[in-house]
Length: 316
Length: 128
Image 1 (cartoon, rainbow over the protein chains, first blue to last red):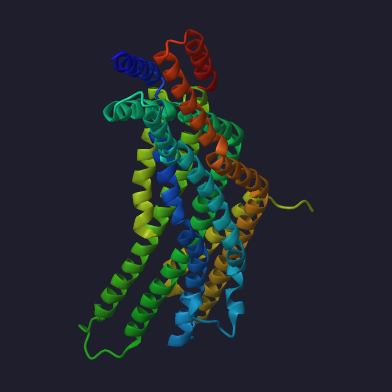
Image 2: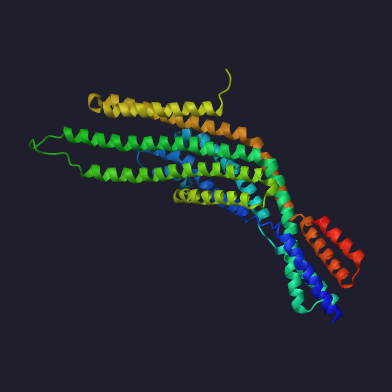
């Protein structure tokens, strides 16, 4: 009887501890959420990196079409380098630097991705290890014969909470250390990736877009010039506009694809700015990481990144 | 001659892009006043300018990535540290230590061992 009373006393004591720890609860969900979302968008980046060279090859492709150097097999290789190699690969000389830099660019994004994934993993409430240790605790309580099986369950739950709070503190300390050391590096990296996509990739897409315009507009003009040169059976004979309408539709469709890519590039670039701002927020709030204010701000960045990554996904 | 920066290289790439576009605008605006040969020459020049733009843009990209290498190395190192922290047995050991302290504290309470309770509370405060 005395033992039962004491066991209840222990449970009460543990419950009191729980309430005390509850005031310093360490749910870093929004930090994990932000890092997960940012990393998810980053996973699609290699497709964009590949498209810088792809866009340049398409630019050369339209030049070849204009020169009437059309051979279906060759054209397939031109737009899809994995389909083979051309004898005259030298025609892609303007794309040489894009090809060489593609792996480095993918690597730079992967460094950011890896960092964000590590941050998310540390912020996550992964209780696998804790659950294992709690099973040992339960066995100890059972062996000691202090509690009834029902009470052991209660103690396990309470002890689990305390353990999570303790390891939460450990996670916070490591996150604080990481963001403190890397805030400036993340700023430099996100700014650089943003610049590359916003400036270099967009300019290449604009070059491709102008080549596309040159191809279609020149073709349509030449068609009109040719039509005008034909002998007329009567003064009322008009130039047949049907081929032009079809060509215009084709041009619009290709231009639409390019615009999707331009929008995706802008979204990626904006995502980099949001990642930088969110990291800055975590950095500034590193001493009160689990405070509602910091977590709310980080959560808001996570939501913005999620919405931007939707635009990015539409093209890649 | 001092080397160009990535930004300067990009500005050049942008300029060639603009030149090509303006030549194109001119060619289309003056289409009917130009001979076929003149149109072709203008178009070839535009193409050269546009290809120059792509070449310089690629060089600017290379220079940007060259400048970034030091930062990439630092972040890679930091990610390794974070992963290590996650796998660090100290994390689990800390959890197990706390569990052990809780058990001993519980036992101290049950046996009304005041010194044990005080020591247990102190130890718990220390590890948390």
